[in-house]
Length: 444
Ligand code: NAD
Image 1 (tube, rainbow, N blue to C red):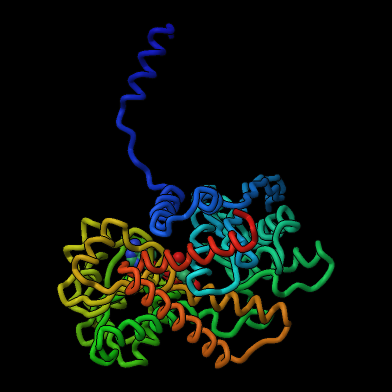
Image 2 (image 1 turned 120 degrees about the vertical axis):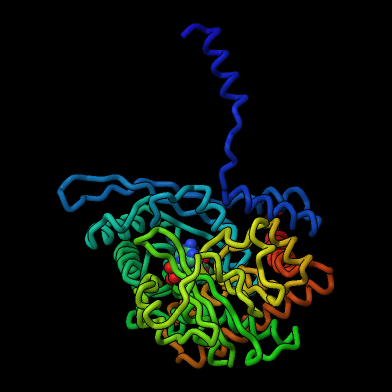
């Protein structure tokens, strides 16, 4: 190609419209910049907090079952540890990117801070698809990830946990490798372990139960009794199931739940106006939260399109599946009766939808507060592990409720005092605590 044609092609490429792809780290930094303005943070603090403190990117060579070697990419990103050791999950995902891990590490910093637990934020991952790996290969990956990062994580510096497509067994392999390398027993190194080997009672239920704990606090403010309310829920996985269980226990009634259908590759809802029967739906759901649609229909449930959960004539919506679900395009379809949205999932509402929900006067419990019961219980597991002394279930739940109530009240107090919507109040509270810790340590 001639120089002229090269220049022409380059100009054409530059002029072509570029599709704006979703980059969670860009979103996380934009969110931070807005809160930094509200808090009037100085430039050094902004520079420190809008990027991770440390990042590790590494290769993990694994001998595969067929005998050959495959090299995987792994990450650990430590966003901030001014308030205590970093805490964050390890994700196994084929589409994992450094920017996703960076964003999630920053969100972990804010989540730990808003519930006022003495931890910072981190996240890790490996680019891989566990569906295509044998158990032995997954074990090698878990051990390989720890071998690359073992000197930069630990019970007093950075504590991993399960996340997307990792589970308690994986955590145990990781712990075992860490203990081999360091020559000792360190049960506080990692959380989300099986309950018989260092896991905490209550961890499985913690997120869903605490979502409902925050709902109960919000209903009190709205002068509503749980037994006079109804709810519609997106998802039927870990968070949704325990949320429904507790919400039913306190007298509420769920009329609609939803699930992903991997056969059809689309979501659907199951509705029973008189109320879904939890045990009945649970009995036809697999361990990944997939409801058997045909059996649900046979049981008398109406099968509705996937986004119908949003339009139900209920008081409360609980998105508990995915990010990016309540958007500027569908807010108008939310029933006028809805008074409360509790974000069980991470990032289910877009910033544009946030503004519209506020205009409609809907009370929103933001994700970093609403689903923080999970990380709080993980913190309890770390504490118990470090002491090598484990609490009974009642002690765990009493402590969890105390933490969540205090966090809810602090967010509401900030919202009222500064005239902010709940999400901004939660972020202001969280970012301010971290900024102060950095200042008090003399970092900025
Ligand atoms: P899960 O994998 O156990 O369940 C997910 C559920 O969502 C399943 O029922 C699945 O069928 C359903 N689903 C998936 N795609 C869907 C779609 N397009 N429409 C409707 N339903 C769909 O996951 P989980 O652990 O319950 O997590 C749910 C959300 O909560 C995620 O955003 C997660 O990041 C967040 N979260 C989880 C925890 C925790 O402790 N599990 C803690 C904090 C935040």
